[in-house]
Length: 401
Image 1 (cartoon, rainbow, N blue to C red):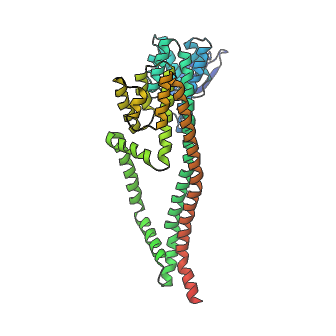
Image 2 (image 1 turned 90 degrees about the vertical axis):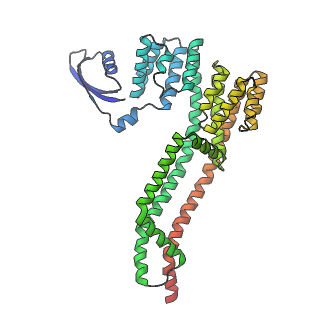
Image 3 (image 1 turned 180 degrees about the vertical axis):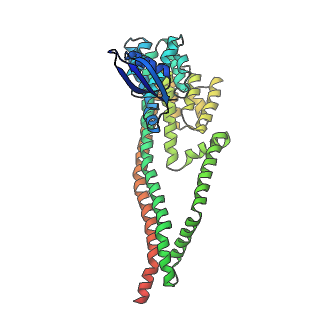
């Protein structure tokens, strides 16, 4: 946990100086001050503000950058302790610097790099740990780190594409709900007062809009609590019930338009992870089990788990995958060619590139279609509300005319 350390000390010239360091431990602060040739006199610990935490927290991007920097330094022939020290000095993220300091301390205490990383499962998942363990045993830790970095960078690119594609629809949906709510609760009630004074029979559309406006004004809090409560309950059920999680994972794949994108994204992650692990020398059975977790979909994970059992019994990988009737024919054919030619990693890498490109194209097409659709929906809702309010005025004008 990051803390705000205010310190006072004396520099090389004997002058009193002070400052603050954001860190997860006081030992790291003392070490940093020693490196700056500062003699510590006093240190007080305080809480880190939300903005400071957001600025210095460790994300997947920093772990990827850490892997690439450390791999590059190790490949240049530097010892791991010196490499970690250089990575820490170059980092502007306090949480990454603290993590590297702790890793360095554990390695200096006699732990292996794998053992040091295993203490932080939040940042280093099982796939990462298995590859590092394999690389450390084979003496190719630098190459393994560089392959890991490249693998994570490619996955990050696809995740960012999905994130960017979802931002515009979310903003538009929020705009639609906000504008509709303002009109139903603030604008339409003003028209309702006017219509009461007219004493005329209102059109059917106007009556329904006024009724809906009254419902929203009277029960908006109840509706909001119901929606939030339902979403929270669904989330709890999804997290705690494997049966519901499996059904939702399956339904997610068959939703029109969105389903194929999720499928391609999941298979791209599976194929690329399988290829990366295979090239790093990880045993194929362990590789398949670890790669299954990267799909992000329980339905695929279960299918890969069943295929794994068949492979244990001696079935070829492509036949085990084909027997599940879940995976596309392209994937099965490419795996078969890779197995028979002895170039499974190349075939899997090509397969991942194909799915990445298809997923990217699908996301771009979806974004192109969604933008005019959402604008049209906003226009229909707002236009419908405006027409409903002006219909009685038009009717009264025509009667007076």
